Image (tube, rainbow, N blue to C red; front, side, top):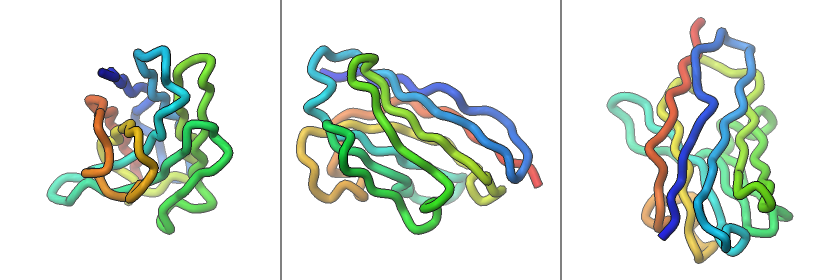
Length: 124
């Protein structure tokens, strides 16, 4: 089992930045790929970014490409999501998720473990 805990959310003005963290409780963290998803009120859970266990390959959705960066530090069992140039449309609860198969990385069903989420609110 893998436990995931997100942190770093908060309230920022449009154009600001936040860095989210996802801490995992497993000694084999490096074998898991990790994704970030977000869910706004009344909307489906949306893929944001994903990273392979090695950290060498990453993927981002078109809506955040160029603004968000995903990275990981396996020594700290942590994955990060650096969010710059935030827009009001980015407002959502952000979740990190982990899985052992790196396929369909942009779909929630492809992941095995989920965190509780952290709220990100961007004011205009």
